[in-house]
Length: 297
Image (cartoon, rainbow, N blue to C red; front, side, top):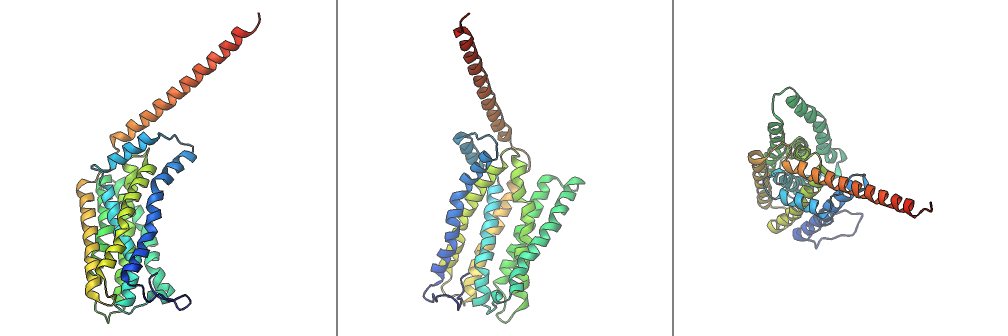
């Protein structure tokens, strides 16, 4: 994505800061679309829209003890660093061009897909047979999905420039084991609020991707020479720190129980619907009575 292609115009004058700015620009529109998209999806899906008050209530709640936001932030920061920066590191610092080999480029995401199919049933079985509680399961798999990639990133920063196989293995493991997070923070939205999991996902995804804008920008500030492993090491250590702290907050404060506001907001919606139905019935009766009284005897 940041590498030169002989088939297109050359942009040698772009330094790492410019390329990082361009990489982060993808998330600008992505962030702005999250909450409106989730609300519109609920509306056109035939479900009741509670309006601005409901959305505001859910948003305010997210800034309190719901640790799912922190876990979501850690995942997006780390995953998009792996996605946007590591290929450039492998090519520039280690002289390993994975993009020239379609199999190597697809391998990390193929492993991620396979692990999704393996880890999800395991998480369900652990809960079904009471080996772990739902909360413990969410924290366990989120830790696998964020702390294993964290360790791989740290190791990537200390690889010898003559290594060929090890960087590919570490990148594959790092991206692949992100799949475990899908059994952690991602499904946690439905644990916390089955009635409002959609808007909740829109809010956390918007906040997390807002922070993800800064991941490529931080890399651009730190890296002045893309061929210097020392500078890349700093980027990886920063990302590893984000991975560690965000998941630690999820492990300490995370919950997998339905929150009280899930029912309160639903009751508001039911009350509004009932009131609306009552008003409609009253209006209909009044209209019919008016017709009856105005009919000549």
